[in-house]
Amino acid sequence: MAKAVTGGFVTTAIIAVLGTLLGALTAGGMQHLTLVSARRDRDRQALAAAASALLGAATDHRRHQYLKHVMRRKGEEETPEIRAGRYEARSGMTKALTQLTLTTDDATLLHLAVALVDASNEVGEPDYDDHAAVDASGDRAREAHSAFETAAARHLRRRRS
Image (cartoon, rainbow, N blue to C red; front, top):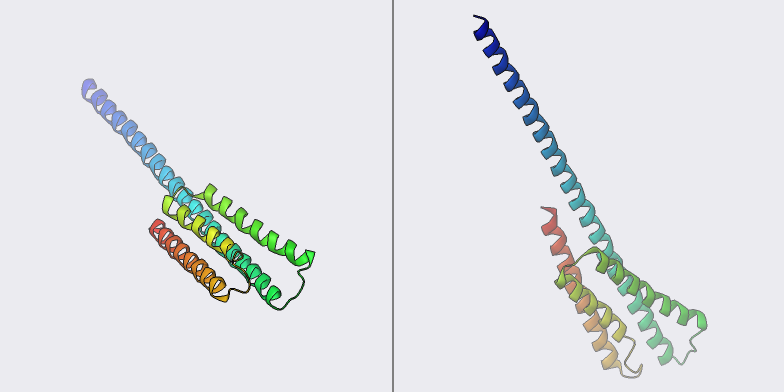
C-alpha cells in the first residue's frame, strides 16, 4: 500500500512540475509576442512620422522654389532672409530624407523618396522666364510627391496587419 501512495505522489508531483513548466513557457511566449507586436507598432509609427515629415518638407521646399520664380518674374530683389528661408527649407527636406533612411530599408520607398527630393530640387533650376519648364518641373515634383505618398501609405497599411 505504501508503494501505491508513493507512486501516486510521484505522479502528482510530475504533473505539477510539468504544469508549472508549461505555464512558464506559455507566459514567456505571450510576453515575447507582446514585445514583437509593440516593436512592430513603434517601427510603423516611426516610419509614418518620417514619411509625413518628408512629404511636408518637400512641399515647403517647392513653395520656396516657386516663390523664387515669382519674385524674379516681378523683378523683385531676393532678400538674404528669403534666401535663408529657401536654404532652410532645402535643409529640412534633407533632414527628413535622412530620418526616413534611418527608419526603413525598403528599397522602393527609399528610391521614391530620393526621386521626390531630386524633383523638388529641380523646381528651382529652370530659368524663371521659361514658364513651360517651370511648370513641367512642378508637375514632375508633384508626381514624385504622389508616388511616394501612395507607396508609403500602402506600405504602412500592409504593416498594420
